[in-house]
Length: 192
Image (cartoon, rainbow, N blue to C red; front, side):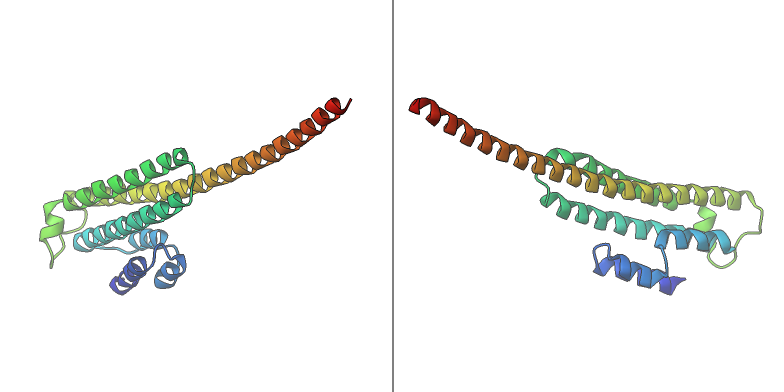
């Protein structure tokens, strides 16, 4: 588990959302694999806290790389009005990651304190930790969905801009044709 997370983090660090490197490092979508791992593996409070913290670190790096990618795409866009919603979405994702890290830090003290002997099962503290873990996983899934929606919106905005540019070009050609026709008519009237 630790080696795979390390490989995933290395892929995220050395390439701007290099999906191929991420998939090779994790063997599938990293978020879904981490979720599946936590759902199927029976972990103690110590492992639970560590896994949730590692997920939040990976998501924070992905959000940072997403912001870099959006900034690069923004430099290729002529209409700044289309960029504002994307920038706001990126800031929202970064805020969600920050909130998630604070929640991980505020998990029950026993989860952080008991590093050798986990508490007995079915205790009140473990139930609170489980609820915290599920809340954190839900928020991570929401952040992932928000990233996908932001990228889709940026792609749609760029397509809309390209369509507008093509329409302007066509109108310009029509205007040139009308001017040419007007000049010919004016010349004909002067001849008469």
